[in-house]
Image (cartoon, rainbow, N blue to C red):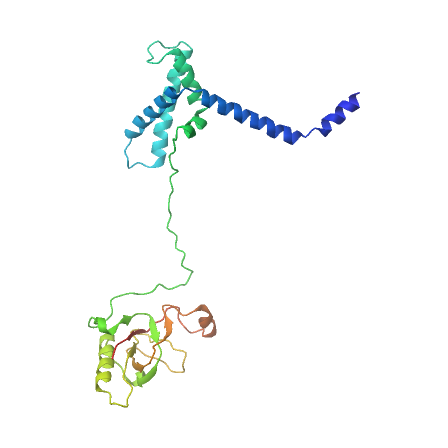
Length: 262
């Protein structure tokens, strides 16, 4: 007989029974919440709104949550004392006190959801420096020399390609402005069979500018170029694959350029 009882217990779906019992408890809890009269729910809602209006609107979510929780505790204390006949000065009836005690006690979480009480969790944003170690920032400092006019279409940290109409190794200018003007002047003075400058490339770096060719490009080099359809050699940063193939290349493109209309 004992073996038979033990065998039946072993065959019982224990996990399934636990799940069913849990669902029953949840349904019973929901039923309790639903049994709270609408006028009590409305009273709670109104008092919470009054409490929140008394808090500075600029306060964060934590302060708002604390204000509501403080109100709930005071109201629950008042209802509990009335139920246990510890006070006679309450403005609520004994029946209402019992309903409030149930609503503000064990059923508070469910009731909060039912009346739509939701205070967002405060989110703290922390700024992180995700720049890889050793990575240089793009430098957008004021360009030396006269202010470049719009017609120069200046682009910093940019290197355009094209056929050289003036060799930069022997053509230096004091500033990017002077380099751009030299390009515009060459285009105006070029003969019918000569290529007209429509791309200027200038080296503003005092330490020189990198290029994949065999030359050492120095400060103030001014290259005047022509390209039917100007194309970028490099923009902003040299790609990692390029730097792997050219170990001496910097991260940031040092040249500045412009494509002009002629």
